[in-house]
Amino acid sequence: MFNLTHHRLSLLALLGVLAVPALACEAPREGGLAGDLAEAELDVEDDVGALAAADVAVADYFIATHPDYRKCVAPICGGHFVARVNTSVTRCADGTWQEECHMFELDLSGLGLDRSTEAKAREAFGAGQALVRGGLKQVALGDLRSRPADVLVASEIWLGATGNTPKGHFSRVDSTGIVCVTYPCPSFSEHGLNTDLSGPLDGVDLSASGATAKQVEGGMKALSTAGLLVAGQHAIITGPAGSMNRLDAAEFYLRLK
Image 1 (cartoon, helix red, strand yellow):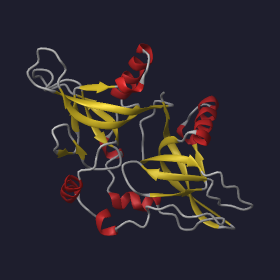
Image 2 (image 1 turned 90 degrees about the horizontal axis):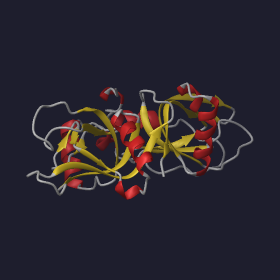
Image 3 (image 1 turned 180 degrees about the vertical axis):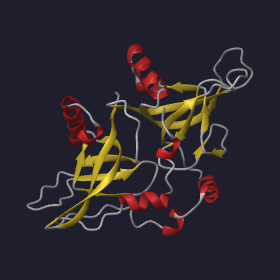
Image 4 (image 1 turned 90 degrees about the vertical axis):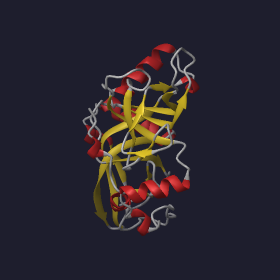
């Protein structure tokens, strides 16, 4: 099961892992890294205040942290607890900010999946092997229950390729299409999920996750066309063009459509 310590990074820590010493080639820098450092140093209490005041967390990336084994009446209990990746606080269905939030049900109805695929996606998310982009809401389920249920309404779901426990930070990675005559080269761009932090990458090593050659091939194909979500850590690549990050994957996620 997923360990919460893997994703509860402060924004300051994320700034450190996404910061890049130098940029190879004549490529434009991405925005986001020059964010306010004072905001990056917020502790949990300040995070709650700042995020609640902003009132903007509507399409975050979530991971299931553990099942809800509490013994009380559904839908108050049952389902899973979930958390936003890369951050220390999550906006719950009741509007409060907590370290993790209750989810009685995962709503995948907006994704147009067939019944078999939807069941596979639910199982993977409940096991901590998928990421969901969406928001938590209180929804009346239309039965005899007197209370609305805490529902995670998904706009995207991304399935882990290997089933590994994710480690490090979570990012979206895309191909930039840039080709250089030297290295390191900003061939990829990285954006930290649930943050405004981004930066270039010289490379992405999906094989570091222990993925099979076929899984790596599928991941790189998705990366070059539609983007990929990756949990991993940086290594520094130094060459004639300076220094730049490479992202070594512990797990990577492909979007289910």
